[in-house]
Amino acid sequence: MKQQCLLCNEKFIGRSDKKFCSDQCRHAYNNQNKKDHELFITTVNKILRKNRMILHQLGPVGKSTVRKEYLDKMGFDFQFITHTFTTKNNNTYKFCYEYGYLEIEGDKILIILWQDYMANRAQLSGFHSSKPS
Image: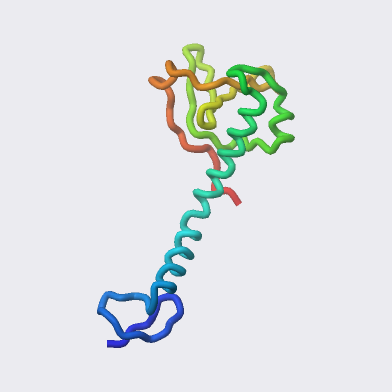
């Protein structure tokens, strides 16, 4: 029974469940679908890695205060975080992996490093954003 390749539409003879005429077509088809499917994930991960790098550069010793404009100038995207931590005083730190920040005094940001005691009260929240463009 002749079948039609899902990628190149060429007719071929093979098992009844075979969908591609060659390994090259099968790989190309799967890679193309993977790219389309994982584009959103790749975009979000790129933003998260950039945010983490910025927090690391501005707060390398565990705790520091910077102006929000510095993060803006470096391209920090405040919509994307990995999790949150709320203190007993009801302050909610937003984290990008092990680096967290808290907006204080209007235009300042307190950057902190994750501590082991925070694990019990952290909330994994993914990110707070619509789909990136």
